[in-house]
Image 1: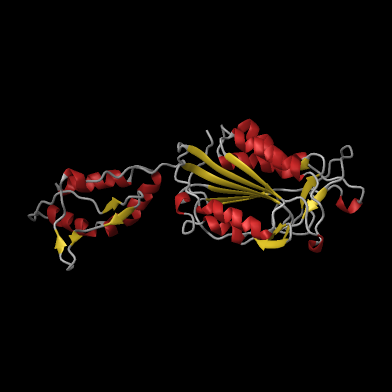
Image 2: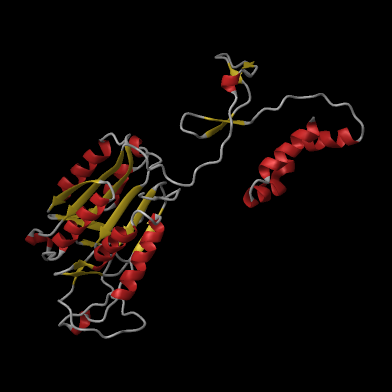
Length: 342
């Protein structure tokens, strides 16, 4: 009986290469008592037979909890109930987010174009084109999209706090798109700068319970510093419309599960925008989503966006200091599963 139990346990641990390694390294530690008993068995000793049981059971959220026996209030241990209701089958976890809820989810777009004079920020020409393309793009993916134009810091925080306090139980995910100026660690409202963390933290697991375990996507079109990327090779092309930049943040992102941050550029660098066609990042993002949004996984999508921005765009300006510059987006993912919008 014991040998059969040991063989069964070995077969569970060796179902995959990863679990095989885990077994080979730790099986004696995890079942050291049984290793010793096997020695006794081989020596001809008499062994008491035990019924098979498990050391873990799932709670209501699908997590596994260690247990021995149930305890009374006075701390005494009760025998485990071996009725059919108390037996649990441990199943392999899924590696894709569940996207079959009633709704795909809400997508909030904040489009800041005009800024108070005291901020010293210029009008972000071309951003309305970005907002319009993003609206159509995310609508086609099934999101409930709402656009807010020219929001102050207070209004930005309030509308996103309201969004985080809504019930997302029937939603598969949440998306937020920020189109604005920025600077180191900050994103701009029309009246000044605010920390990006003050926005994203509203959707942490301890702040927004109905989005726990669901993907929370943030797309940020803005600069992340004042450096230029000259590239390692320049290909000349026909003059374009004058390009502008959005100055923005280097943001320390908290390590929390199921967040994804897609920045238009890497820390420390400008992010480019064309007044006529919109920002490079948003153009590429919409192009890839429109063509592959319901076929590819989100990281595959964003990798193609990176490639498109890196290879298809180069700045041109009447000011030579701003000409022949390059850009590469930056993706920071704490997603724990694969995300498909199909």
